[in-house]
Image 1 (cartoon, rainbow, N blue to C red):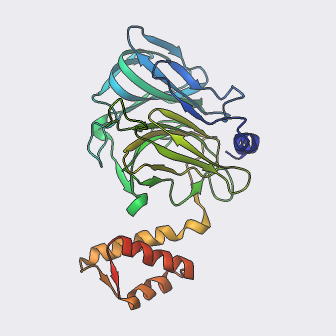
Image 2: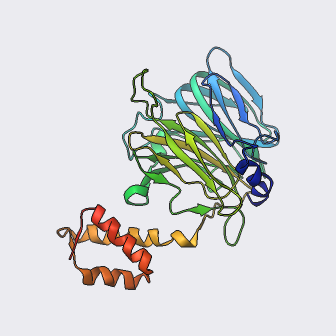
Image 3: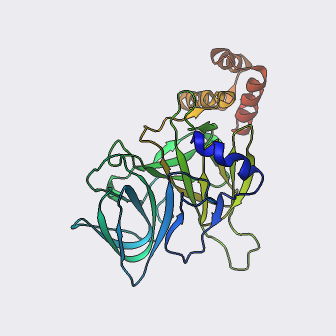
Length: 335
């Protein structure tokens, strides 16, 4: 959000505040509390409930809550109405391109009781009005392929004001090994035609490693606005990352599968992301890649056709050169 960035950008840049928290896999409850000065958020909260022997009993008061199971089975009673679900095998038990996620929206001024086993992540934010509870079962969840080549990923929308909430927007994104998300660079800080939202990522990595491995799976999370904040953070499994605003692309290492749960909150606006103009040509590249793949021809591209693409999309000399490099890396011979 615009005001959140104004308050925290320079403090993150100077290392006074760290937006990257490593979850200890034991704590249960609210982890990112926007009321805390050391948390670079103003309205969005994030936490994890560990479901073991004790029930979680809570009143939402003026806030709305979205629960997203990470592993295990659960039963939630909201104002006397019961919901049940499970996520067996964790977040990576589905094949790429599919999702085993589910989500439960709990409105403001509600009382809920949560029991079961495993781990449930949750987001909370001020509600703008009272709505009924809403459960999205796994059978109705759809993973959507977005982007192309090394910035292709699977995005799974879960909860938004379009279907359930008044403020919170929640979903998951899967990054194949070595691939990027948040690309082309975009932001939602209330400038120009963009919405004004804070965000939180909960990073998970597929742990195909031995205990004696030196590093294990990892990725890099960037946070930058091109002015006062230009930072990179090493992330691992269960990194929790607060995003006050700015651009926030993330990349998985070539040996790591990354899936991250994301949640946004603002003032109830529909999420509208503004692409940074200097990276917009990547979306045009996606159109060209798609057209070439639909041709079903041999991977031979004439220089004349390449020039035609560049002219059609009004690419600069530098952008045209980048396109040629990418096409060659994708296996096309240009002659």
